[in-house]
Image (cartoon, rainbow, N blue to C red; front, side, top):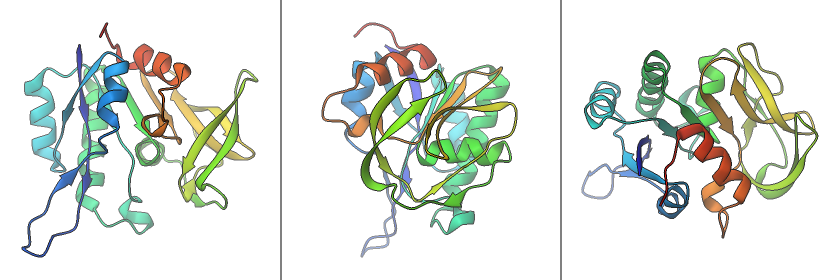
Length: 202
């Protein structure tokens, strides 16, 4: 299987003051279905990049959960780690997939503004791809972009809300839905993630 780095949430301290990183357990079977082996990364920018380099990762997955700090999120250290990992992967020519919050990291790194949007939290809705295709996806975000600057381009929308993007020259893409939260991995998501991150056979 292909090794990919996977970012995590930073949880608030528990009663004993211990802080933990966390990753939705549903990522593991989804990534296995894509032929990928996840390597969880810490929310420490320097350590995350050292880990990614030492592990010989073939790509990076920026996962969801919580808003970016500039929009009220609780973990600026996670923002810093993910932005550094994005730059590291771009410099190394490695692919990056951003999911929900992870796509927001990609958007902000390229200068796109995020705005509050209504009706996108804990719902299902239809997205329309740039090629005119339609599919129903889950939605759990309260912030989104309505326009993107080059070199990004929108590849799916729900009304005027951008639901997926890709980089025109680098292997970087993002989706606002959560492929790992579907009861059964959607074939389009598996195909897209394999195509971007290079998953091998199971």
